[in-house]
Length: 449
Image (cartoon, rainbow, N blue to C red; front, side, top):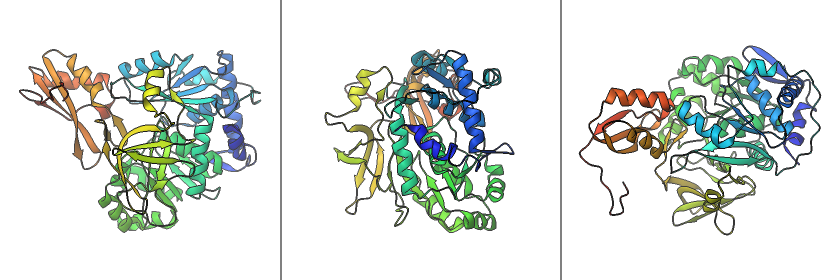
């Protein structure tokens, strides 16, 4: 089977059912089928064929969904790009993926105007067909493209719909960015598989979030720890009202501080369900829907997924695990053990009763507001600047974002110039919050910081 077999449970069997609320308008699943067929026709007229790549750098919008579904129908590989990325970061992805086209807000309308046919493309697909390439940072600083197949997306969606009891009676409020595996892999796919109603917003805005949640009365909400920290500012009366309609709050993409879980439970009357996943693997583990959601842990392996811990590092194997890095056989080979387990790079422990706790990264990954930051990428840019002779970027605890990057530098430099360069060439969440001048950076005998 492939993804369309699952999507058709909604696109065809629930054709007249309300599917999506976006920008004040409502759409049925039948509307989405026809819109995505027109988008597929537009891509076909641009010369797209099975295996071609389409890069998409868009904020959340219905057109992004149209394009993703069109890619699935054509066997085209969808390559989302973070909307916060700047020219330097975009250029790397485009040069590596070699897409036939890059879609942005500037050329979106003209592209879609070329789609007129509402007939679904007739194409042979299978579960091993690549559906997306999602770029994830590596310890070398250059991001690698994780190739995710129809089977990977499907296995993840089926697991979550089953384990989290998602059905067509649910109402999903989705404010996470669709360029990220969290919203794309979890949000979009569980919605299309279950046939629930979804309200999509461009981004999470804590100033309007309470009003949106009260108005829509969702039963299902996916968030990152930063979002839940912001929601703690909700008034007790509003929090209680939101909690009355809600069935499940889920958190991921970064560790959820136990005190946030406890405070949220007091305010909203719900225990957030924390789970653990990666771009390369989708969701690996989850606290139980029925049973103890233990603070500070990520629960148990999901069905069909094997976990083992060796030397403190967590290894995973299952149908959720990606097929490799795009055009990087060396990196792919290094990422897997001889018996097919993926090396996550996450350090973990497991309790006597099976709960898994993440204790840190084997590498020096910084997770800020749910976004991954690898210091090497920032360090390389800083070392290109006049007067900087050495650079080390580390994560510092932050109450709202979990961690933020701070740069330690050796040399004579203009801090304002460094800030300006970083803002021009890096996503905003990667810009160091402080630039600290030091006499030297401590290193091991082998030269490692």
